[in-house]
Amino acid sequence: MQSNLGLERGSDDYLLRARTKAFALRVIRVVDRLPNSRAADVLGKQLLRSGTSVGANYRAACRARSPAEFCAKMGIVEEESDESGYRIELLADSKKVKQHLVQDLIKEANEIVAMTIASIKTVRARSRRR
Image 1: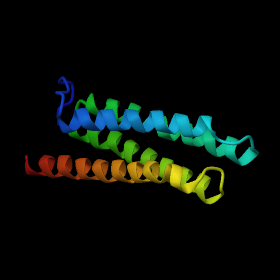
Image 2 (image 1 turned 90 degrees about the vertical axis):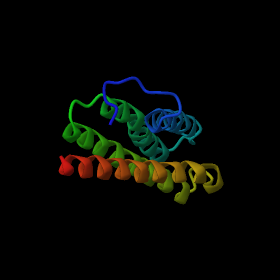
Image 3 (image 1 turned 120 degrees about the horizontal axis):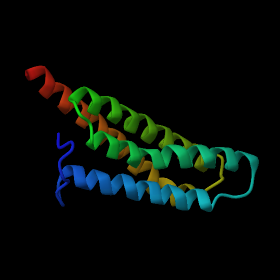
Image 4 (image 1 turned 180 degrees about the vertical axis):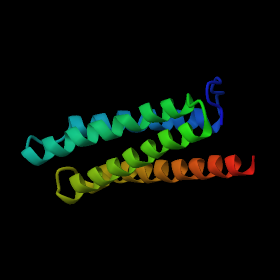
């Protein structure tokens, strides 16, 4: 865990930081293009909150002071990524956005969830060995 240390270009931490920020920017673009309807407005606001919090919480995890704090903050990243993917699926399934336009974004949300779970498991395993 590299908390409180500089993120080196090319490191896994740096790449995940860049991916979570890019994810947030893509979410913003999707929300900005939603049609004017009550459902799209509600889902859009929820997606905007969860999608942009993924990167913010990952940044907070990178500054964690302990393995336990890191895992707790990464748990939030996992939850917000999963919620974002679900909301994007709802928007696509309800025909508020075209499935082919958000397919890659859903995939990215799922990949962020998987990477987050792997990071949590790695840190917990290291902590148990000590």
